[in-house]
Length: 91
Image (cartoon, rainbow, N blue to C red; front, side, top):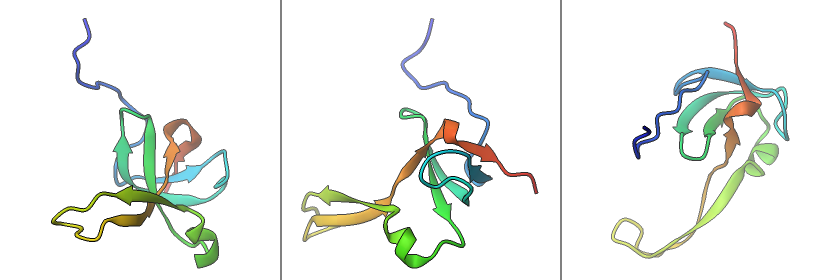
């Protein structure tokens, strides 16, 4: 019946402007940078948030040494929000 590929459909897509309706970032808005279908999450680019509050938004990830990243170590990156916690913003 189902294939191995992820065939999910969401009410939002990459590039949409959305509003967060629940969680830590409630009532904030942002643009969708990526949709992570396997985890049911979206990565948001937040706008209009003070830098000290935005720094808490960034998570850290440990990377191995590679040619692209010869030192390896910790890298800051955006944290995703579950797709059910966002609503498409009407323009």
